Image (cartoon, rainbow, N blue to C red):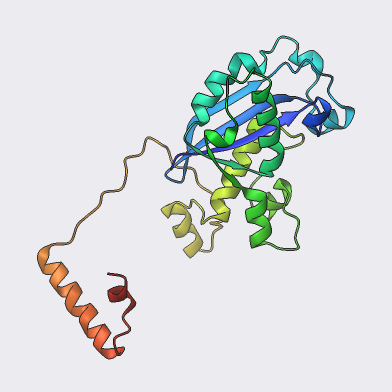
Length: 235
């Protein structure tokens, strides 16, 4: 399934208090590769940015004065994420704000859940690392992902970091060169991005003779294990 890693920045913590989204950042993952496709937009919130929020992301109302409003970009945004699996860290926060923005558009749009499936990487991290810090900075450190440019939060920057964290948490995205370097004592923990334009790997089907030899081997294993050959059990 096509996956979209999403992050937002907002004027404050609670949309129930009138706070709004001021930045949306999305990056695409296809076949476990981060592609060149992304969605990024700053938004005019028509609401004063909270002082504590300003310290987190550094985005000012003055900077946002000439930016479009959510209603101006919603169609393009939904088109980008529709039918994808959304990967979000602390999804309750971002989805809550997005659904609030959608609800303000006179019933023209459904909730995010109607357009996408949602994976919360915070919940995933808590299951994998119980009792540990699981914010984005902690996960970057744990999986050795370079976040030195993250002096302030930013939706597109954080979405890119989260994409690498997610791939590392769910099995990694390591090139053959990285594995080779590791065999020579190198560091293979850094995720290597592969061009989305690279052709898919070929699927080579066995010949009839190879299948016969394969089945004979499975039969021998099954006999020696007393009928417990797991490969035959899954056929």
